[in-house]
Image (tube, rainbow, N blue to C red; front, side, top):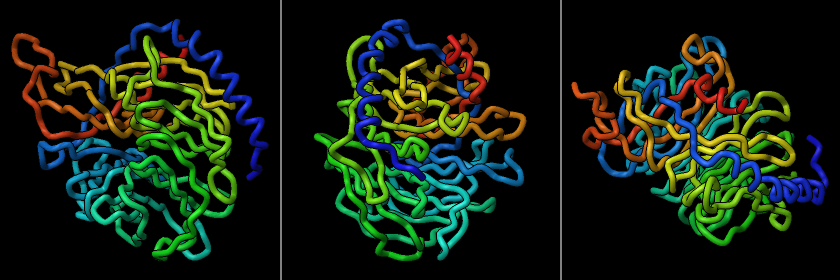
Length: 362
């Protein structure tokens, strides 16, 4: 992989800063989309569900899996129908990500990683059609919250976002090794969590909860902290509202697609172009579908997306979001919206990408 000159990356993102407010001003109210399905709930009414990752079944995409973290218990595995398939009691897992088709020389397969707040560690899993299996664990610094993974020429990298405001990358050559190589970190002024790696642009996107979305150049030795750029800031009007939580990619080509973030402060999701200088193109909320008996989403933490066709129900891919304020399904006879139903344990909502795509052409 070719690593770009850092000044070029910084310049392109700086240009985006000037254009973003004008684009945002054109859209004053978020659009509305409805969920297609929802997962089974976690087992407690506490704040438990947090982040998700999507495993694409290469042999039968309609039977792909969703990995969801439970901050009180471990890792839950769901089918695309939302039914829970597996529960691994591995600790207070916060964020999860995965890379398919890993081949390091020492190990090959589909690799998932999750931040574990029970013992300040990262737990590694092998993922197959049968589910997830823990294969490794390594210790990290205090309070690992966010986590994402990146595919590089030198092997997969796990980026751990700590509550104290720094991202520490680790290169994984053998998932069973409990002492992976630590790479150069990046530092922020306040709490961070959501992140996603874009290998084509050699860039890590990091959500600083009260500030906005950062782009941090990645190199073979880690993160180029001095060249990071805050290019999509928290603000008024149509800007994202704190906390900035989940961050994910929807890739349509080698260098094209979209960046999505969850704007927890106004229960919305922002979509930006995946480009050298990302631009905001849409924002939306997920509203209740009274007929289907599925409530909307509020206070979302983690999100995950894939453009892969996942059978007849999701031919253009899928967005999965955590619902921070889930309510009992269904509506009563007077057509009362599902958001008025009694509170239930948290879960994840699934959104057919075909419901989002029309917003991007406006």
